[in-house]
Amino acid sequence: MTPPKSTAKSKAKNKAREGKSSEPKSSGMKSSELKTLTHPEIRAIVIGIMLAMFLGALDQTIVATALPTIGRTFSDVENLSWVVTAYLLTSTAVTPLYGKLSDIHGRRVVMLAGIVIFVAGSVACALAPNMIALVLARGLQGVGGGGLMALSQTIVADIVSPRERGRYQGYIGAVFAVASIGGPVLGGFLTEHLHWSLIFWINLPLGFGALYMTGNALKRVPFHPRRHRLDMLGAVLLMTAAVTLMLALTWGGRRFDWISGQIFLLLAGSGVAWGLFAWRLVATAEPFLPLAVLGNAVVRCATLAGACGMATLVGMTIFVPLYFEVVMHLSASQSGLALIPLMSTTVISSTLTGHAMSHVTHYKRMPLIGLAVAIMALGALAIWPASTPMFGVIVLLAVVGCGIGTIFPVSTVGMQNAVARAQMGVATGAANFFRALFSALVVAVLGAIVLGGLGGVAGVSVETLARTASAPELAHAFRYVFVAAALVLAFGLSFLIGMEERPLRGPSLPPPAPAGPATPIQSPAE
Image (cartoon, rainbow, N blue to C red; front, side, top):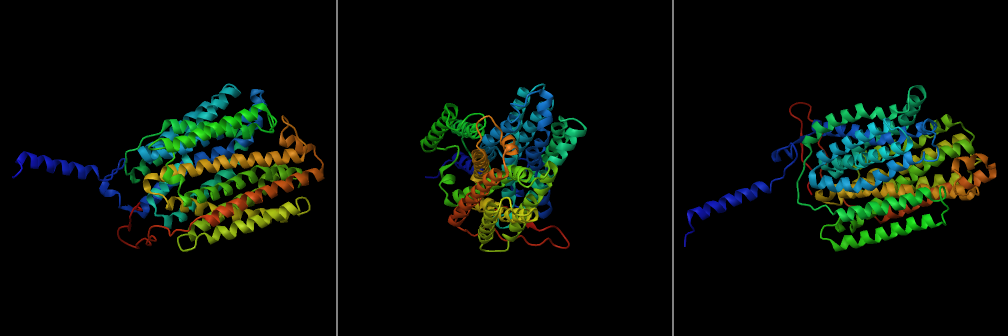
């Protein structure tokens, strides 16, 4: 029996609709353009997100030198640490949320929203009339800044195949280098010669520039919309677990004794929240962090290895300047300059490793060697913390930086290489989340080591106690700081050994043609 013509026509229309709906779409970009990203277009996108990355990186360093002045201005030194802690808490908690939202709504709209929130928080910080208002504004600023780093790494993953992704670590490394070295200098100059609020006002022109550049550049980023549900309960549980744990790590040994009711309640609350979050992962059809991501052995090992490297670097940047001042007897400005070799070699090593990943098969060998050498350098500092000459200390720290730098591109690219495009944002956000959380844990442990080694009690800062201790006590305390840092890197090395070395997807990029139209680059397939 021949079907009626109307029925045949309706079936044809339905097939046409299905075909259209199955085509990939992107914000501001036709589906036919998804596979025509050229070298200049990729370069424009990367340069566009660099300014957004610079906003987040600069804000982590520019505030430090202004803190004493801010405390004197508001006559409130007791709550001064919250200017840093509030930003750290909120930015860490929302990082995986940005990744999930970008997988649902696209990178461009979520990145622009993050920049707008960050700029609004900066204005609120600059206009704050008292310390409480400043702390709240810093929390809002962290809500915006929390996604800038993770989204930038995710966008690079959207437009460049894993095999070629490492070479763009050079751009990322350059941003971190400028922010790490220039941030404290710029913050000190603005605070000393002008006004402390300018460290926040400066984010306005940078933020508007980032909005303009990323708003245009990210129209070219491929976006394959998929139906997702945002697990709000899971997100709240994860943020609650993270915030209570970080509060316990921040207050323990400083505001309250580690063995106190307040710290116990915070740790217990965090444990309950983590338990409920684990239950939520298996109880809902689409959890906040997909089980396919958490259960991926490559993602797990790469994330933990990268977290160990980042935590060691953060801990060293906080406690090494204090070591320079109280053990090596340098001034504050001299200790800042002496820290440059550690930071610069980390950036250089990360950049070179990223470039080399495009040309070698066994890319794990570079961080395996680098971390082993860094552990030995930290061991030498632990054995001779006070007797090593200053030149030797700087050389050993440079070696540590070289070793740590090798882990960042390998862990990031290796993790992204093991997940599908639909999970790229949430996987990268989760990796950055655990890096920040583990960094807070390691900083707390190192602070507890110094306090314990110097016989400290709650309510006395590490800096005050270190400046009143004897030379043998100082050497003893910092010896165990270097030992702890070496142990953290040893854990990172073990996770790296356990990470499967999968071939990086995608062919090497052909060199740009000397004449004629640029060679198109196909977006990496899932």
